[in-house]
Image (cartoon, rainbow, N blue to C red; front, side, top):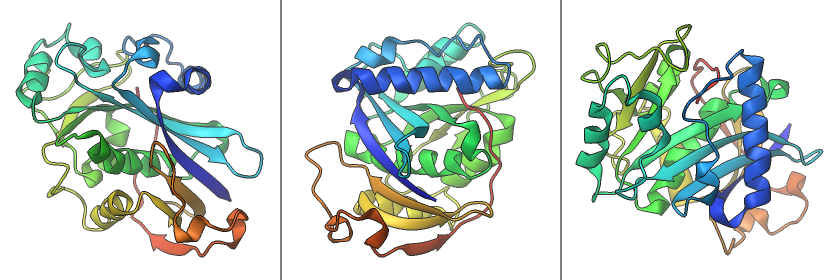
Length: 260
């Protein structure tokens, strides 16, 4: 199975934004989630919003995505709209990081056809690596409990002073969610020892092809985490995607599920 993950600026790619949004809504609906307050269209015209999309190289279809929204000091990222009514302290958490470079990784989704392949982990990890290109030094997320192990392994830690000892009933009363933060993306001191090298590798070489194995099925993934112009790496010079050398990478086995 061969895939490509590419980075885009939202305001410069309206058609892809629409495709991303429709697919995300469809995945949430499959889980019976239809009232996600933070899942709006405002990010599509946000000059500080970016997203990664994962394409199936066999048929060109989109199988997953994740967004990174940079906090500009005025427009708060989606997690604030998600939980501010329950704890306005979330604004203070963002304000404390403003000026250093911060934002949120959000809107994570993967299609049912690749369920349990580990794309939630792959995309979140890539998003954290990509965030340093945007000048971020810290990054927030909000996630349900079934994804806590995955985001903790990447380096996020719960902000227990928010909500009910760190918990919120979000996106509805059937789920418990937490707001988490990586305090220092540069050092990633809280990242799992197996995960940290992968994030650093993607940061240092955003154009690479590797074999990722999160669960049982190995994934041949071509990363292009450079916005533009995209300069080919030596591994990408041959137009035949299947001819580039594949570097095998074995990873831990996290949980997976929908995100907001």
